[in-house]
Length: 98
Image (cartoon, rainbow, N blue to C red; front, side, top):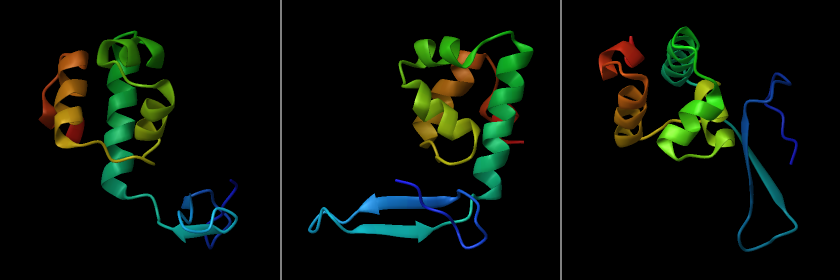
């Protein structure tokens, strides 16, 4: 699926209607600033510790595509996932969120 937001940016959430598999429905949600900031902080801290995205994913036992979406601000992890990320990076939750 290749959905574009109103400004042409790839910031849309695309789903297939579960009742009609041929119809694609696109919802344009802007990337939230808090999700983007969290992702930037995770990436910055991960790189400062010399970790690859794959290293972090193996520690967390999550898919690399998921972590890529978290770091780019496209996914909002749950609080328990944020806690796990903080522990894997050996930082406080506050450090991730600032």
